[in-house]
Every structure is written in structure tokens, then in C-alpha cells.
Image (cartoon, rainbow, N blue to C red; front, side):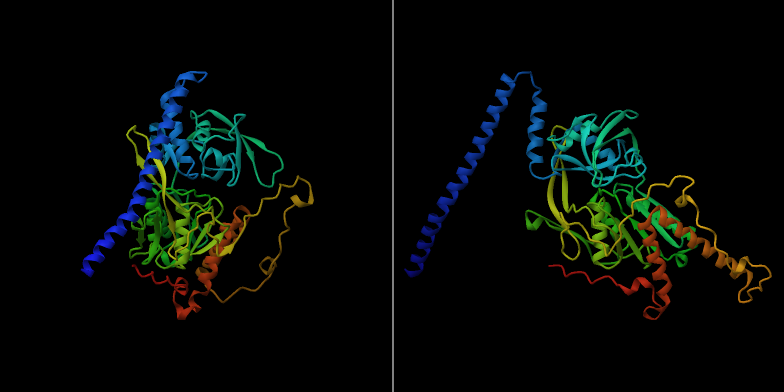
Length: 461
């Protein structure tokens, strides 16, 4: 009887608690339908009484987009044409100005200009605000609408009004639209360093990286001749998560690369590195700045947390969210923020960015001095012992050794010239040169990269 009584009491208690909860859920459902009825009433009133005839499809698309853009700056509705354009863009070729933008304080903010594009050639910089397009204000427009205003036929001119920090007045910039062909990765040798400039994360990124790295090593004369690698991710606006994972994995043997956590804990994912390091243990310096965003930050965060790379430059953009593309029945798509991503140490860079290990700002180039002024004169050549007549010879090296020394000096002078063109990159190359110089003395002759081994991966629950 006691057991039965307990059971009955439990049933009564459950009923008493569950009753109000069910009623609340029912009320919520009714409230949602009432709001949808309200939307329908407003839609019909606009169609019937607005001062001009309206396009019902555009009206509905605007309502959908308004609902999505109210969530965050990266969620939006993509009509069929925009969805097609975006799919083309991820394949590496599209028409436009060549800038990645977001929205801040009602205006369009430049995340970064893309390399070798009309925007980059016109001098557009990361952090610029675009306030007008062809004289028309973009204040209050959705980001997609503002972007539509900047699109147009290849070869046509557009005038954008820019507000830039440190410049007192807004100024106009004229740009000719062009077909944007993105080379995802460009490689070159600077001194004994292989520099890999990663401009975007599209379908071509990892294959390009692998090919350019191999080419750079071959041109240097083999991996033994390479001091290390520079991954230049400055002004890289991001792109495909899958490519960011592949690029990170290219330089890590083990451990977590990135994890994502959504609204439902069970939807979280972890991505781990697999065996194999394209750099073969050589030191890596990663270059970032305020235009490095999203997928770029995933790569840098993974390499930094595993102590696989020294991060140099200025703080990154701080986009730590993941967008999912959901195809819709009208051939369009919904871009919806579904998760945040976290670096291997568990940190989110959302709105914070990644802080470099060594902060190095890019100096603003000085205005060229007028001809005839003292500043325009070249530094006088300094005479050395080798310039004197009748000097005795150096008997400590052979002719071949002398040639090797002269080649090394020429490389050093070439790297030094880089400081005037790109101070941050020159700094990165100097770090690799310094690490290579002390490598034989570190840990009994081990490679300099072994000084900072990758951390053990966190235990998986």
C-alpha cells in the first residue's frame, strides 16, 4: 500500500507540474501563429494600399532578409542569383571590386582588400568605411543591398566615398570594376626563407599551397637550404572551413585543429590533425593584421596554440562564428550562423581576434622628398678595405668558398631592401634567419623548430 501510495502521489505531482508547462507551450504556439497572422495582414495591406504597386516576391525576400540580418552581421538571405555568384566565388573567379566587407554602425566596413584587384590597386585599406556609392548614402541599408550597389558590369566605373581613421575628411575613390581572378596562394623565396602568401580560402587553397611550397623548396636548393617558412595571411578575409583545416593540418602532425560548438551541445565537432608536416619541422612565422579574418584566424590559432608558429603583426579581425549555407526551395539559400569555433586551447576569438606573439606594425611610408632637397640625396657609399690599392689577399678561403660567401651577402642585401617595401615581412624573414643561426647550438643540434614542440592534444571526452 505504501509503495502504491507513492506511485499515485508521483503521478499526481507530475500531472500538477506538467499541466502548466503544457499550457505555456500551447500559449507560445498560439502567440507565434498570431504574429504570423499579423505579418499576413501587413503584407496584404501593403499590396493593396501602398502608394505604388509593389513586387510581392521582392517584398517577401526583404522580410526574410530582415529577419536574418536582425540576428547578426553574417546571417542573410541569398536570392538565386546571389547564391550562384557566391558558389562561383568559392571556385576562385568572380566579377567585382575585390573587397571583403562587413557592416558596422550602419556603414559598410572593409575587412580587407584582395590582392591584385581593382580595390587593392585603388588603395582601399582594411578598416576603411564606405559611406556612399556613386553619391548615394549606404546608411541604413542592409549589407546585401549595399553590396548590390557596388556590383556592376566589368569595365564600368564606380565612385565610393571612404572614411579612414587618421584622415580628417571623407574622400572619393574611383574604381573600375573587373573580373576578379584569385590565385589562392603565391610563393616566393626571400633570402633562405620560403614566403607563402595565402590570399583566400577557396577550393584551390590547399592544392596551391602544396604546389607553391614544393616549388619554393626546389628553388632554394632543397629543404636543407631553407631557414623556414612565412605564412602571410594579412588581409585574408577567410573562406571555406574545410580548407582552413587542411592548411592547418599541412603543418601539424597531431592534436586538435579547431572545434565548433552550436546551440545544441551534441552538434559540436572537433577536427584533428593527421600525420605529416609539409614544412618538415622547419620553423614557421605567421603574419597577420586587422584584415585577417575567419578561416585565417583558425589556421593561426591552431599553429599558435600548438607552438608550431611564431605569430607576427597586429591583432586579427575577430570573426569567430561559423555560417551554414542552407539551400531553399526557390533556388536561393539562407546563410545562417550556426556555431562558434574554438582554437585547440579552447579560446574563442569572437570579437577579440588573435593577438600576435610579437606585435609589429607596418610603418606608413613617408612622402617622397622633392628632387634637389637633402632628403632626396642618396646615402654616400662607404669605402672598405677591399677598395684600397695594394691590399693583401685573404688566404683563409678557396675561390668556391668566396663565391658562396658573396651569394650569401647578396641574399642578405636583398632581404634588407625588403624592409623599405614590407617591414612586417622583412621582420618575419629575419626571425627565421635568427632561428637558423642558432639551430646547431639548440638542444644539442636539433632543429630550431624542436625548441617549441606541439602540445599534447587535449583528451577527447
